[in-house]
Length: 150
Length: 220
Image 1 (cartoon, helix red, strand yellow):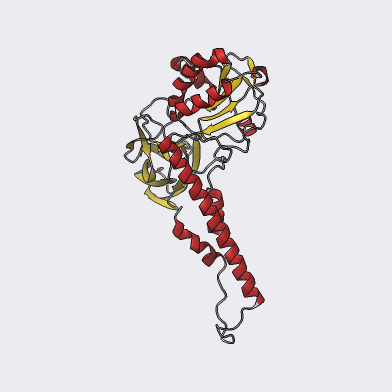
Image 2 (cartoon, chains in turn orange, brown; image 1 turned 135 degrees about the vertical axis):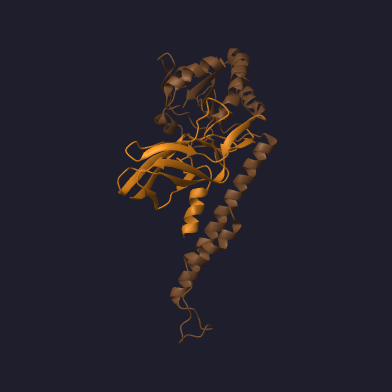
């Protein structure tokens, strides 16, 4: 029955807002007080779609990025996976910098000076296209629990 | 769609009851197991029918890309708007704050093009629309671009840079909904002189396809 429902949802031509990117975050991350730590976010772009990379080839394209909540630990940088330069049916031979399939983004933070459990919240923002058309910018909330010891 | 998933729909959705020690496997099925089987067969049949429809649509779409043919049928379009139906109302502000309505354009052939500055395939289509505006406006063609950007301030600089010579209106989710839920861009609707939808295209189609549709409607 679940598979049948999935089939129903997957039938094309249903132009409701699509869930094109799914994010897999670790249940919790361990860190040492005052020390840097990483969070690996695995994101999956649905088959048949691509999203712009964090550095699109055209200035008018919307880059993939993560907005981290300032209330969490100090954010240092995000290491995005290598993008693929690829041409599509609609690009007239031009190559675009995109992400497809399963990818991993590594976010770097510094743990607070005191021990305890903290939360990291953020929003993964992207804009997706398929071979024919492009879809409105999308966002996926991120929540990770961090256990900080001394 | 992985076709191998199809048999699993029935197998996992409605598992058969395990054989009872008192009931030999060869025994006549009980009314309950018959019902389960009918349900299983029904679900399986639905799944297969859906898969066939989907595969057919996918195949047609792939053919469209390869051959550059139009996606003019209502089934391929983005919305429940039917070919031949009256075009929905369109009342939006242009870049200078003036209200533009579709009703004002009655008697003309109108192409309504939903687009956005961040949409790469829309960038391919814009020069074609500029060219068609230049070529056919005198024969009664009006092209109207509906910009679906969330941030309206991005639109004017883009329009100026691209030298878009036809009216651009600021779109919104409500207008997208009233036009059948336009989410994939570009999406265009071609409307005849009587205000009826004559073609829809979701996604980029060939310039020749658009021009053929327009010329067909401009002819007396």
